[in-house]
Image (tube, helix red, strand yellow):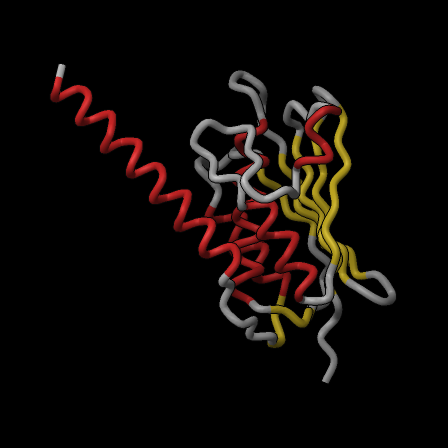
Length: 180
């Protein structure tokens, strides 16, 4: 009984340590290193990284011409990885996965869309999605989307979502073009 209590305490300490660490990292972000980022190649690499099998259900829709944005490449990778993992986890077991990544070159900005066919976001949770430390996952820290929002906005972009219950969710990121 004493050993079990000790293990429980250690587990809780570890959990609190992770929460404190994520809290600290959220408020002490590294300074952004804005640079020219070729978005098409980055999206292709991330899609391949998340492919579990040949038919993993991740599809890219990328323009033929290069898409250059002004951003911190490491942070864009972190944001996209977070959105892709969330998309993958939103699809219930037994449902054929379909995740589409679109890059749309608009006149004044680049629009990225990550669209899944998951369960969607319930109405009562929609206002909390970008709130720090809110998570619908037992093991989630709740900083992924809050951090994504803060980073995108710090890079002069915007992020939002549209969702439909049992049909899926699209997360949108609007980023400025790179200009010399």
